[in-house]
Length: 340
Image (tube, rainbow, N blue to C red; front, side):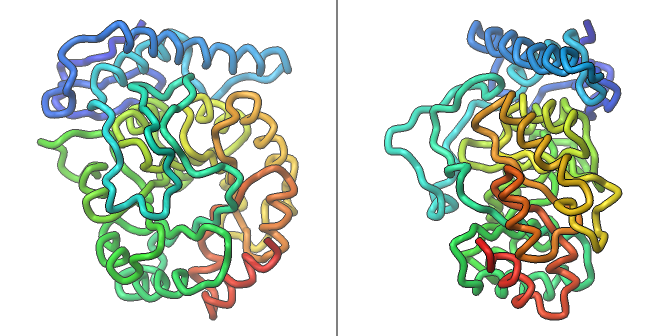
């Protein structure tokens, strides 16, 4: 079994080869020992992943996106040892969230039903990824956020923005949900260039994308991030195919978004080019968890695309150029939500 802690590496650099090289936990952990609850959580994570792998093997498919059982146990131990104690999401960022009074929290989310409240997965959500498009950065990002905030729709609109634009966008459109495009499971200290979740939250982020096709990370990275962020902070894990979607769903993020890389940024929606990957992901994720919301993306540009995505089993879409490169972003957004 690979080591969960590698003291030779002073920074929390996470391997992409299926084993953890998580190192010094100074400044990251509030736990000094692995408790019985944490050990139980580790076993639970292994059990759930084993179930996923067994299901796929029974269908004659290879599990190419998930680590082996030994690695899973190491992931779970690293997560439960290094993750800070769960804490409530800052009240100033929860006005748009439906919270259950008195809901408790659990120390680990892997393989367990959350007691804390979440938004209902039945809510339709449209996440606009600003990426680094020239029309969606700096002052243009602020203007696009204001446009999004002014759209009259019952769907949830979310802007996923550059970390450099985060604070300015939140200020420009205070009623709009704003996510990061990426975060790192690091603590305070010597982590040059990494993106600390606490900083993002302080600057107004209410969620994040992770593992986007244009910024892939290891499954360890996703697992550790999920256990570091506070309850109520939403995480949308991106997947390139059904196998990866199942592996990520076992970690119980708020959402899994399937986006075939070859269709990202194109003119043909995934709902038309490959509807099977959308419906297949929806079915596969439901086999793993009833709690994870399912999104799809790649080439989504019209209200018909969004309506088809819902028909295929998702609760919304993740898109970028359909809005950020549109001549009239407001009209594009209105069109996207017109058939909901």
